[in-house]
Image 1 (spheres, rainbow, N blue to C red):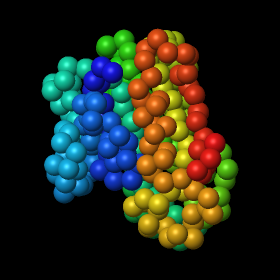
Image 2: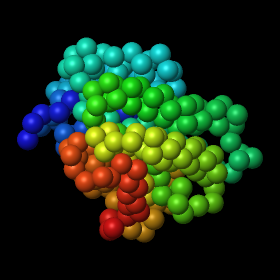
Image 3: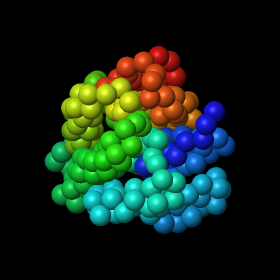
Image 4: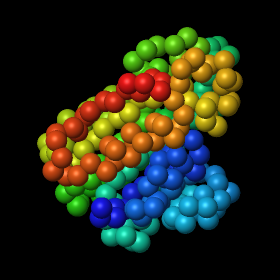
Length: 231
């Protein structure tokens, strides 16, 4: 397999980290995270590149992608796994928590996709895998803001996938159910379904989509649903 240049947004924990672990042995991986200590720890552990990047800042996203292009020349794929949890009834959420969820899950997703597609279009090929949530397709009580921000990402991805007019640039999305991750720990185990997938299991599907070749079957716009350990 030819080594590819891949970016994993939110690659220092949870699903992003699990995907990066699967990729580093055969590919050149760069992890993005807004936590400098995690970037240092993960890059040392995996032997990959990393960038401190708060996706809610367009300038940081732009500069992060530019640094990858400076290092490797191309970007073959981008997995966007960064997300901020906002659990609780709307009345109980602070304005600060609401703002941060919108900044990361909506604005951050927009900035990442804008820059990713800029570079993929310049090259004429590449894959983007957006990590949504099953809450988008199966509404759950108690997480209205989180669901709304993830619904924004889904709508954006679907529109962008249609706009590419080429299978060589694939824009896809994966919707996992609740997983035992750092984000999940903030919610509490009671939010987990009785049957659920571990990040390591879902990461295999992120990797499969990320490594699709430009001439593979037309799958841009594909929505993969994974609610638990089964299909």
